[in-house]
Image 1: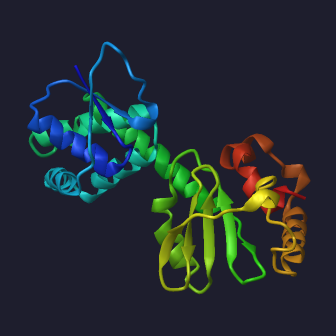
Image 2: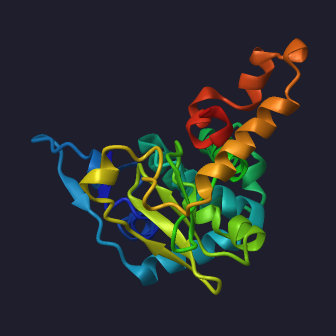
Image 3: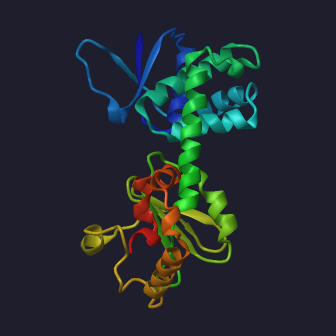
Length: 256
């Protein structure tokens, strides 16, 4: 078995597939540089990302797969799970090497993995769309932060751009230290230096940064949430099933 080490990017992974075909490698173990542990008894091939090589592999894959499975591949990559890289690498080679329709063979481990992992990432995306709560800053920008299990920011763009097209907003991933900024025209990727004061408590923005009315809006929403609840029909087990506790930190109605 040959060991391939790549930079963790989608382009790098696709380049690794290209190199595997070029080198006629039969069995390959693929790891990202982040998870690579040098071994004195194993020689690693360090893959250099190449846009043209990656493009050729992706085009070959798209000839065999429909849009849904192409997106499944991307979602699986966004899971960032170490084993996902190996499984996706195997899946791509399996699809390219077999007749069209091979993605329907769930007896193939990599097909089953990509199908299941892409659903997990999609569920996380859906929950972020449902549970994100914006705070209005003094500059008129609506800000929200998230810490999703998977890197779902790239697939959140369309939903929030369409739903909040008339206001400027930022959604920031605290775990991965980057965010999306919509300026009423386009969405761009950004990084923010929060500084020492904000870094000590990123669960909420400091009051001096917020719009003066933001605290009032939050209180009104919390009062509304409490007034519409029916204590006699409270079912915490069902509630937690639909709104897991790990998402409560995003919800202003859970902070009161």
